[in-house]
Image (tube, rainbow, N blue to C red; front, side, top):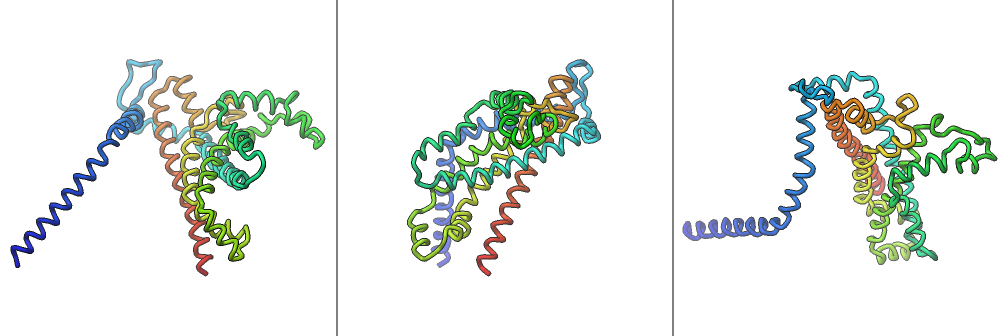
Length: 313
């Protein structure tokens, strides 16, 4: 009996080893992509961390030396950086959430069978295909110009004849531009989620007497959870790096009202040539991206958990 038990144990161990070898062989084709990802993302990030620990200014290249956390101390005691940090949070969370809600509404409309649906989808997605710098120039000189802007012309009957949107409402302007730019991205993700819903299940719900709101709340929204989370994560990663609109439209002003960390990093690196301080800001941007994405994901997860509790009650 002991011999049989020993043979059985050896067979189980041999089968586990064989399974591990098969798993390694399946993963082997992914190795080049993994190496490429490490080379183009992780190695530059580690180099950025190393530079952030250096006192390194291109105006004085021969005085470079190890400075520890001095650059981090410097940026967190900088009042402009604290302002840029607060602006970064606002200019990331608001456009991401606004574009997500608008994208959800537009995706629901485009998911319906209407005449010219293909053309409508192309028109809705087109802002995402425009280069950010070109779009920023169109917004600045065609839409928001004080004298000849289309926005003042359209809102003229309401009293907005010569409103200086860029200077008087700079933060709202940047939020609007970023929301306009990233709403098509959310539409693409959420429309893919809507089209992946099983049609027979929805039809069965309608036959059972469920209304449109009940179907959306109990079936569509839970089905879209992973797509909403994906939109929040990717949107936070991209929008936190917003630079084109701020650089082209407001230049970070007036009075640092629209200066976010990427723009302030640009000023430190390419105007002040302070590589150490700029690298420290870059590390902080990565940390902020992780924090904002995590916060947004937990918020969405909490909303779905609350809906689940309500459904069970």
